[in-house]
Each structure stands twice: as structure tokens, then as C-alpha cells.
Length: 125
Image (cartoon, rainbow, N blue to C red; front, side, top):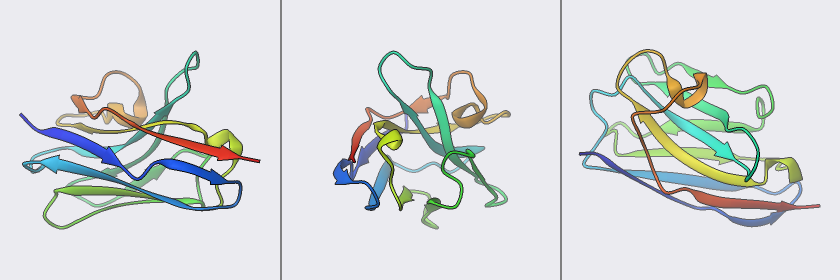
């Protein structure tokens, strides 16, 4: 059973940056996609970004395009989300997730196969 553990969240002022990390144990070989979604209490979950394991192609939600960058190490053990030019509306709990089959539920809706416990990001104005 693969486990995902997020880190790197915190509090930052608007315009600042954070880098989230997601450590996979043992690894995510065989996954179809990995990505990040975020959720604010009482609001619908939003898929933020994903990377398709076999092709390396990426997807970003319009709300973060041009500001966030998703990447993964070659060993498939760590997923990153570099977040720049943060806005107060980026405040949320961020979750790392993986899917082992089509579609990529991390960003397309539905339930990802696995996800971590989340890391809180708070952006103040």
C-alpha cells in the first residue's frame, strides 16, 4: 500500500511563494497520474494540477495557471507543487493524490485512488 505524506504548507503574505512536497512510500511506479487538489471547508474540492506519469504532460486549473508548477522526481518518490504569486483565494488544505487508472480523478472529479492527510496553506492579504 502506497502512502502519501504532504509537507511545506504554511502562512504567507499575498505575492509570496511556497513549495509543497509529497513523499510517496515506497513509490508511485505504475500510477496513471499524480496531482494536487485543494479544499476549503464547506466548499467543493478543486483539482489544482496533475502530471501524467507515462508522458509527463501536465494539467493546471485555470485559477493557478502561470503561477503554480507541478513536478516529480525521476524515482517517482516525491511530487512537488511550486506556488508563486500566491493570492488569498489560494488559502486551502492541499492534498497530494494518485490514480492508477483512467481518468485522473485528482483533477477530473471523483475519488482518487489514494491521497495524503493534507497540508494547510494560508495566504493573507
